[in-house]
Length: 150
Length: 262
Image 1 (cartoon, each protein chain N blue to C red):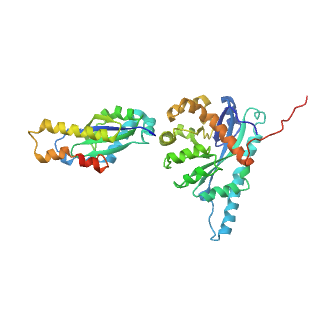
Image 2: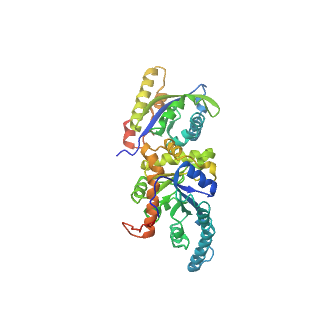
Image 3: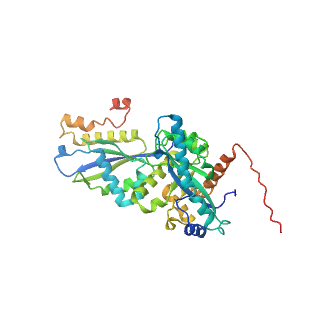
């Protein structure tokens, strides 16, 4: 029996500055900025509705891919405020939605394909190390048998 | 005891003629005046268990006596001519930290004067015990209370209700967020079954029309049927349950009708 549905939102973060190494994403800050944005746009109802089950589920600093987890219902609030999140740690950023899935496994499959496509596109200019870095998507799922698959 | 019907509001903090007038004007047929007792503040002084128990009992009775006599004279004195339209009950809210305090409250001398018993657990693990106890009518949850779906379904089976009150929500932004979060959490855990919507009004301006209160259900994540039930049917079953507790085990209660001979 399905008690309640979840939505997992795969989001790409891009910052405009070149020095990527300094930029570190922390879960808590991301959580706070998104909740503040929801409060300015949807007010108390939006925050109250989404706080029950909102969580930054996964956050990859090298590829800058983030997975937000929400309940089905308030996921509409989240998806509509994502273009408005402009700033993190005082630096301009941009979030763009890549995929909305109902299970983590689907998101995982999507991220894998997405990164493979990225590598294929850029394979002439990349070194082997950066290739491995891009393709490394462990930690999305907590199960070991899926991680071996990658 | 009259069979409950119509719109109910099971939590009013104060009562006076103004408030009763407002309720009658809005078309409510039943209200309950709330008295809150924080059991954790009651004295635990002497080490001897028996002595301590006696002392606690005395303290509690004192507290109850002080507070017990406040609502009853007001509800009887204020407006007798309204009594046909509006039934006024007394409700006791206790905030407890262990399950023994609930037993003490049940044994207290002044407890039978109250109609409804609401319990607010201050610990997490207490919630499980409360859900299975037969004497609780209403459980008040906070955002931080951990509720499991299983506990919720047990509570629904035992005909225990959960409370959401809207008057504190009107004033403050933080409490508004918390109440909305709580309401949505109850929706996740048990699909908003057995929820009653009360006002928790302190003064006259906090009281809302029952239809407006029902429309609040949209914010709180109720279905259309549940919004109506939250202010009528669920409240009736709370009152009937509390009345049944006083009688003991019983199926039918027969009462002679007072015939008015012309």
